Length: 137
Image (cartoon, rainbow, N blue to C red; front, side):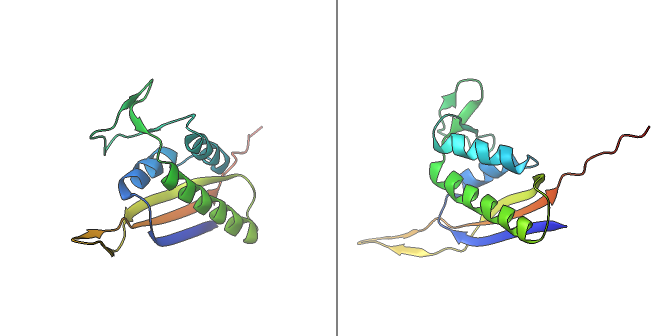
C-alpha cells in the first residue's frame, strides 16, 4: 500500500523544490519533517548540488541555502500525505518512497510596463511502509 499527494501549480521556486526533494528522498517521514523544520528555523541548510550558481557556501556542505517558503509548503504536503496514510490504515513507520518537483504552468503577473512569469511548481509525494526484516532462527 502507498499514500499519495499530487499538487499542481504551487507558488514556490522549482529549483529550490528540486534540491529539497533530492535531499529528503528515501528518508523516514519523521526525519524528513525534522530536517525541514530545522531549515525553516535556519539551523540547517539544504545542500544545492544542481542549481548552485550564485549560492553561498555553508560550513561542511559547500553551496547551500535556506529555502524557507518552499520547505514550509513541502512540510505541509508531507503532513498531508502522512494523514492520508493514517486514513488508509497504514502504520506509523513510513518513508518517502518518491518525491519529485517539476515545472508548473506559466501564469502572467501583470506589471506596469512589462509582464513577468510567476513561479509555479508541481510536486508529487508517495509514502510507503518500512518493511521490517524478520530474523531467522
